[in-house]
Image 1 (tube, rainbow, N blue to C red):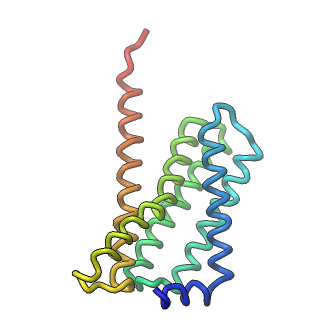
Image 2 (image 1 turned 90 degrees about the vertical axis):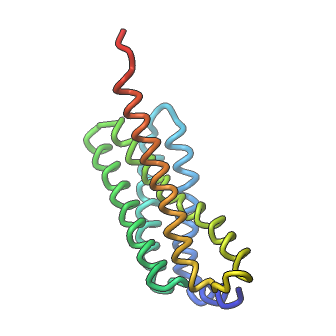
Length: 171
């Protein structure tokens, strides 16, 4: 654990430049996605802080504790996050609210994959006396599992909503 703390402490600036905008992004996501009406300035901040979070996530891969496995998970899911954010912005720019909201929801769910990664890591830490896996061996696996869970769940949920809307009885 001391080695993990030392890794983050030695890269304190980039860690702060990633975590603070990510926290602001999550707060903005709640405000933006739960509102019935659109607030232009909140949405602009949402996209700005999302872009900062995504860009700094790439930078954080330079010191991935889980090596190339963790780095590959971050590169795949951060790219998917930024692509989703970009699509949402494109639909916002073109005034198409329904697809904008869907892509924003997808981006937020992907970003929150890091939160899902934490209990997965907890499981690996708890079982490490039996498995003898060290953090540098399981961090990457935990990242892939956590982000994949969120990506799959959000795609299933979005698909089910689309399916339900297609099959609404007409009046």
